[in-house]
Image (cartoon, rainbow, N blue to C red; front, top):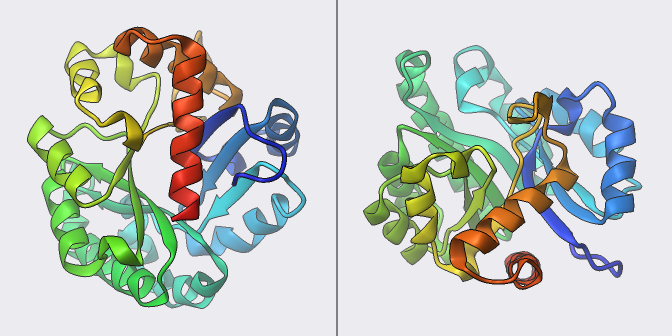
Length: 252
């Protein structure tokens, strides 16, 4: 994701294929130099997304099997395995223990464990993880099946406890933060406890909105400004820290 043209911003989790103007949005990411990771929710979406960003200098695509879709899409796991050798980035994957999806939790764990083991075997994968009401479970699976020397995990929209954040950091995890998270005093306090060297930004667009419109990757500049204020540092310093974190993540 860090090509010869140095990025200005980082959006490490969004869903470009869910925007109506996704082709224009990819061009916008290149023009604005936003290092962008677009995630997929099913393996069937991977080939189209891969082709969609093939000529982009700043957008990369992740191979995913979203936990909220496992009940209907577990049968796509063999397809996931088929595409995995060609995918450095994996996501969106993980666990969701929310009320709407808890009935499929056993299947989610089965799929997540399978994905982690496959990624560990191939090594070098970078995963962006969903962990709604399931942070401890996600970390347990990482501890058992995805050693830090076999790849890297990023906790997307992390809303766990300070103790869970410390546990995740000890496992080598990074954390991607979006603007919606910073609206909550509780979550702002949690973000303050994340080591600065593990911090990335995201939009999770188009699901997160600002001023009534879906956030676009370039809008992470607002999140960087909020993080700078939160930590009491200049905006350019915070932006540089996040770029350096990305560089370290993808070069490890």
